[in-house]
Length: 446
Image (cartoon, rainbow, N blue to C red; front, side):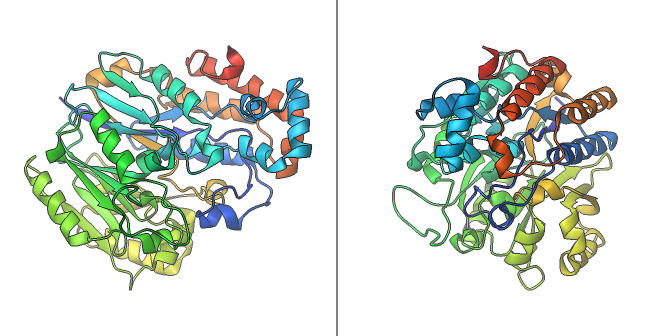
């Protein structure tokens, strides 16, 4: 049965700001306290979604979270009316208010890990919501993320949903940002490659400067939950040295599509052994592994992090060739752009580059790949999903008007203390759930 990769992009939330909350994410911490433009950020994301839809690619939308998260503030001891809770938090614990106001759910590559039905024993699409327990501001996302995914992919005949792994460091899970899938075509059985930063039990190499957010134990648990065949599953350790240079997720140093893995020379530990295993298991499915290595002599790890060359989208076009979607920062860096120009003219599988201005997201540490969750769906599964979240001219126009109506064009950390921001968020999100036919997925709607 034919299948499609549907990219579900996160819609940037109303509280998008630069609070520098993500230790280990160089862009996030270096742009702390700059004034953000939530309206522009949301519109930039929507323009990318619409442009890819216009190219004939299938594109969906995932909603933002309710922020500030008043229920979390109440759990932490703040009381009174909602306005009083926010005022208390702003006065007594501004760092906590900043954390529960984060719009980081826009980076839905961290929302969940997804395995297509072609790979799973029960032939359903499996979703495991990420616990994101390395960062407080992201660990509070799992409930609403799960609600949204269950609303969009509701039919139990086609979709299986798993709760987040236990909120403990041993089970640190950052979702699809550390997961690749290699295959001949989307509807065929493939090999799922889980990339981890450390092994909680058994020791081994670990980064020294920044945390390794994904554990092997978490990746193995997800493979079991998703009923994956061990002969179609590979676990690879990310190079601790690149984590210490700001590569906080695997999708900052490699990206896959079909049989292609586009990666930096320094991305992995024990690359030769890992690739031999991938090649062997992929060949058993009738597919030849196509690794494309970017040498450090041409693009340094630092340049890869600064431009998010690998936090790109690799997409298959109608002619079978691949398109790479990169941020404007990659175009503005002479060395990286020279590499991309040579790559697309080399006669290999990647023959086109598309550049998008995602400056608002980039300043907070998220590029094109951070903004999307890849979900492979066959025809029946696509028909069973909520069609109202799939991008088209009408959805684009409706959501653009919604953003223009509800979003501020300037937001700084100090603005988070304004209780009116909560009211604005509730009003907008209540309207959004009606536009997208999501039902009551937010705590304030119950």
